[in-house]
Length: 431
Image (cartoon, one colour):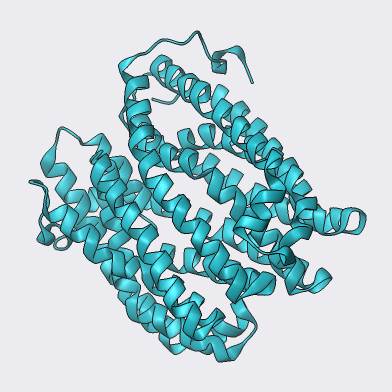
């Protein structure tokens, strides 16, 4: 990485203050979500065990792919253009109307197909046709799921941080309560149903929050589409579709490989390790989404863009490193607190996973630039190549490292990804 990407001396610019303010507000939502996830992890560990964790991971990957197609894969574009047109209310409304019409149409079609092929999906994803009812729940509530994601994208683009965070808090609470109630009654099946419906329940909370503003009306989500806007959203739809397929598909393939090689319990240990990463990185990843993506969308100057990237690196990387160190030092306590003694073997996977987390966040800071600047070809190429290479490296290392191959591959793959993006961006004019 060239010197242009190295952080200069610290100064409290308005942009840095905005980042700190956003991070502080976001920390409130993260604290609530963290507490909810602590409870959720313990519930799942008790009710479904390591094997159930693997099944939940499979279903989450499937939901990611399904909802991306069902929404038209345009929500990142909605955030981008809502932020970019911050001074043009009419253009913003054309974005929302176009995006809403696309999302509603795609969601209705996807719901119909999921309902028809629910058993086939259950076999492909969960290897159990008797779990087809889970996909029927998803089909029944998918439209609300998609509309909630669209409203969240609009709030993010409008920089309505308190409202966006409130909706995230509601999601955490609903997810915990729904999973607790349904898993107690139906075990693994109940936990999967909760994953199907929680975002749909939160839709009503998000809608109320939006209606409390002076810029939102429900009729702005449907109507005549703007062809120019639709074409602009199409590039983001393509990028989002690739991400929504390539990354979850690579995880599905890796998990299937681990199940075949080591069984569902061991695959569940790998899933649990990734869940630990999700938890302690939550503040960082959500801050990047809430602050960084809209901010990048506003910048049209190369020097200012480099300054913003350096500033985010100054703030993000030290926190990530400290978080990883803290998790490693507290690893034994965390296993007992978050899970059960049955998950103790996951300690062997933790060091490589934590090192990979630091590298991943470093790469994401640059990866968001490609997304915000609509660098479609470069973004798609890197997503596809490195999703595939993660699978290949995992398969290749398994004979030598066993289950640990998955986390070693994770570290190696993100290191290569970071270096590749740095090279691409240093050769690019971002205007």
